[in-house]
Each structure stands twice: as C-alpha cells, then as structure tokens.
Image 1 (cartoon, protein in one colour):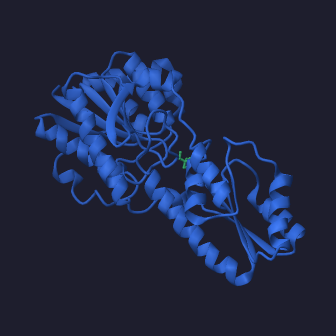
Image 2 (cartoon, rainbow, N blue to C red; image 1 turned 90 degrees about the horizontal axis):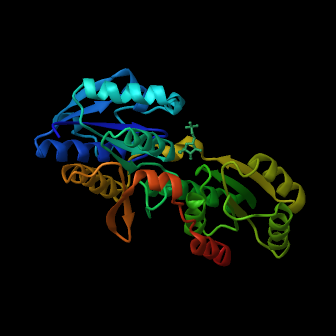
Image 3 (tube, helix red, strand yellow; image 1 turned 135 degrees about the vertical axis):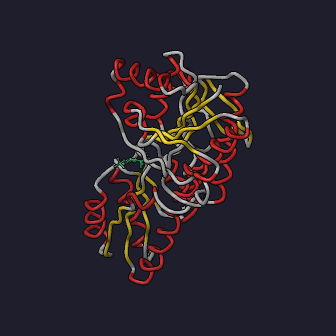
Length: 319
Ligand code: F6P
C-alpha cells in the first residue's frame, strides 16, 4: 500500500473526526499517503479528494461532526456508479479505503469490497445499530446529550407537575432510548424491538398519576408514534399537563465524549493495522473491550445487531 483514502458517510456522529485523525496519523507513520474524500460516496464518485497531512488533522479530536463532510448517496446502489467510483480511486493511485459510517455506509463498503478493492469499515453512528459491535462511534456522546436533555426536562416537569414525552433518535434501533431510560429513571420506554400497547402504557401512567405521582417522563424512540399526539392523549386522560419534546439532530452534534474519542482513536488506528497486515473487506467492532474484525459482506448479509434486552428489562423494572 502506498496511498489510502478515508471517508465519512451517512449521518455524522461525534467522534468521526477523532477516527479520521487516527487513520491519518497511523497511515502516515507507515509511510503511506492519505487523501480525505469530501462528502462521502458522492465525493468518491466525483473524485473529490484532499491530501491529508499530520497538520490537517490537528485540533479536530474534540470537534463534533466530520470535517470531511458527509452525505447520503443513494446512487451508489447502482453497480455502474460503484464501478466508476472504484475506477476513480485507481486512477488517483488510491490502494485502499477506510469508510466511517453507519449501516448504509457499510453497504457501500461491502459493494466496494465485492469489487475486490481493499476496504475497511468503522462503525460511526449515534444509533448503535451495527451488527457485531458492542458500541459505535458517537453513541456514547449522543446518549449523554439525550440524558442531559431529559434531566433538564425532569426539573421543569416536576416543578410544573407535567408529563413529558421525549422522542430520541435511533432510527430502527432502541439502544439510545433504552440507555437514556435507564440513565434517567423514566416511567416508560417505547422501542421498535419490543411490541408495545398504547392503551397499556396510558393505563399505567394514569394509575401512577391517580396514586399521587406528580410528574412522568416517557422516552420514545423515533418512528414509533406521534409524540405530540401522545402528549395530548395523556393530558386528556390524566388531567396533568403534558408536553412533547423531539430531541432531533441536537443528539448528533456536540463535542465527542472521552469514551467516543478513545473508541474512535483505537478503531482508526486498528483499521490501518488491518490494511497493513493485508486484510481487506473487513469491518471493525468492539467486543468485550477488545477490537475485533469481521467480514464486511457477512456482517451486512447475515449478522444482526443484538438488542439490549436485559437493559430494556431493567428500564422497565426500575422505572
Ligand atoms: O443514523 C443517524 C440518524 O440520526 C438516525 O438516528 C435518524 O433516523 C437519521 O439519522 C436522520 O437522518 P437525517 O439527518 O438525514 O434526517
């Protein structure tokens, strides 16, 4: 290997910059050149590259977002577009690619690997929904952001005797909601992995209020229900005022937590180690504190992210 590319793709996640920095500095220490790909797969296809040096990644470790830019690029589903992108890399002397992103980005990395081009995937998403890894880059920071917001909502809810229905991100994965629920001791948590019944939830909140509870917080994973309607329903049912809060993209931003910085730095360096030892078509994962790697094609095709069932049960039993 003489030259590698690094890109971030899909939704940005805090810690992506730390991962890029680790890739760049490790690769340079091996004597490789590194180019950054601007705006994910769109930039890859367009040949939008910038040369990266040690200095280009200074002062980035603590910055949220991704300085390379990111984008969703559905056109990459077209085999012709993928072949063109690989050709662009070859024409630019790029021998291998590190992709940092979520499940959609992994799909792109899988396609590139299937074309025989050396590629390593790093899990970068706040959703924590990548198969095989205990944690993704950005999850811890997003969780802390969600928890901080819910703690603040608790202050005002308890002061006003209100019910708060809080929507958190996660796409089709309830990890963020479940961990926020345990961290904040909420009354109910609604996630896609567990079938839930609106009437049962409403009845249980009503019972608590009737028993003298002054306030309540419900955490709802996005795409589950209309949280504004839920707040209206609960207000009508319980007689307590209710408000909905959608945390939205606030959860994606902000300075990465130390946990994410460490994870991203470890994973970025590890990606280069893998390429150096001749690996390709692999994705990096954290398993019981250790970094491991899987076949990226297998990861996409046959592995499943394991839902945090015991943590969910804990949220229910303690909340
Ligand atoms: O994958 C990260 C994520 O923030 C999800 O939690 C959310 O469903 C989605 O991206 C939102 O995407 P966009 O920023 O394109 O609206």
